[in-house]
Image (cartoon, rainbow, N blue to C red; front, side, top):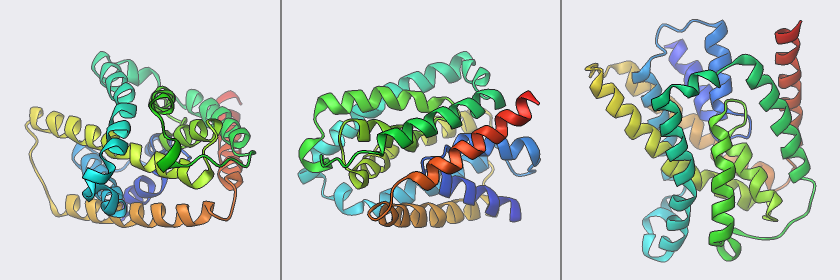
Length: 252
């Protein structure tokens, strides 16, 4: 149960903060051999995060008629990363990206880019300024998140900030774009789970969903409250320190 709690904290917190959930899961699993880290638990953790973002944005989602153009744009923006992710997974190329050295460099470099993008006082907002042109650009940038260490949340926020969106709405764009991406991960994971003929679902899966849901929901809520008043510097500093530490151990 402790393992499930730790994995849920990692998934719930890092999925929505600009620090890369995949890199943290890879780093942790490299140094701690979890008995319960399998496809079934991974799917459960993502279900929890998916339910959390759906819950947080339930008004926007269930008022679909009013917001249908927004969610159409969100879906379009997610197509490049879903197609590229599918190709990388099916060809096995994704395994060549899950390297500690790559994680070190991407954590450092994209942390610096996040810092640069956050230095400007920008005023474009989600409701008025999210054009199809911006959706396309953000969607292309989001493809980079398939490389561990880049961070899906981080690269979307970085792209939105470079496109002059304010800090809070940049984060909201990131959260909204996580909905189709997480849904695609879940569907793909469930299909693989069925194909492996491993259909078991235990109490650990239920706790994984529950814990991941709780930590994801808390993260979304307090991250948005935080960036209303503060910059992203704390995440930049964390990324730079982590990147330098990883590279030190890689090259020493």
